Image (tube, rainbow over all chains, first blue to last red; front, side):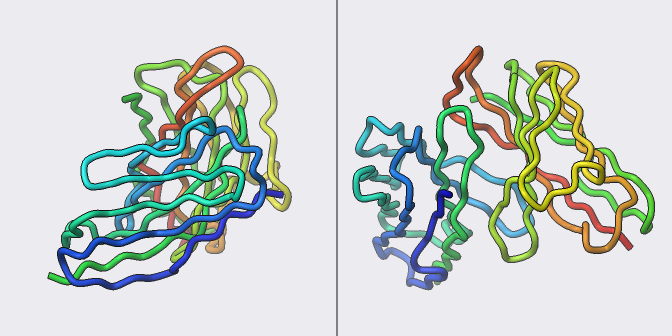
Amino acid sequence: KQEVTQIPAALSVPEGENLVLNCSFTDSAIYNLQWFRQDPGKGLTSLLLIQSSQREQTSGRLNASLDKSSGRSTLYIAASQPGDSATYLCAVARRRRALTFGSGTRLQVQP
Amino acid sequence: GAVVSQHPSRVICKSGTSVKIECRSLDFQATTMFWYRQFPKQSLMLMATSNEGSKATYEQGVEKDKFLINHASLTLSTLTVTSAHPEDSSFYICSAGSGSGTSYNEQFFGPGTRLTVL
């Protein structure tokens, strides 16, 4: 059974810092990996999708990498801003299967 | 990107009543939709996989007679919480794959439905 772990569980940083969120998964037979953002009481916003054949994806200040063989992904946020404060969820999928989510990293960026 | 809607966004009901939640893919067809549940300060947990024209597949520990799923068309899946109780209060989110046929790529999520059972 796939298990997804995210470290750290919570993170508080001053504005402007570059930061890295970590995600690990136990079964490397994945179809893709997605990073999501969730604001309190809200739904999910998809940030980046990495196919199993890819090693990284970039969108603006966000960069996500994938090392499928070691079961790891990182989300890099450059020049963090208070508006980045949210919970970040990592999720992996097998082909035609539902996503398995990590427990999330709660990020607080202090102005 | 593809859009998935959910209705209602928020519902408050009395214990013992049934609540229906709709999940629609607005601009694509989805042969498979997924229903997740999220309790406060926890991550999303898969409840069931909804397949168009066939019975849903439920995860272990999810009562199929309590959480009725109907996927009558390629753009609509419904989740009915029957005889709801306070412990069913949660955030329910659906998702749908953007592909067609036997494969799909990215999953798109609805905005979620906040259910509160008094």
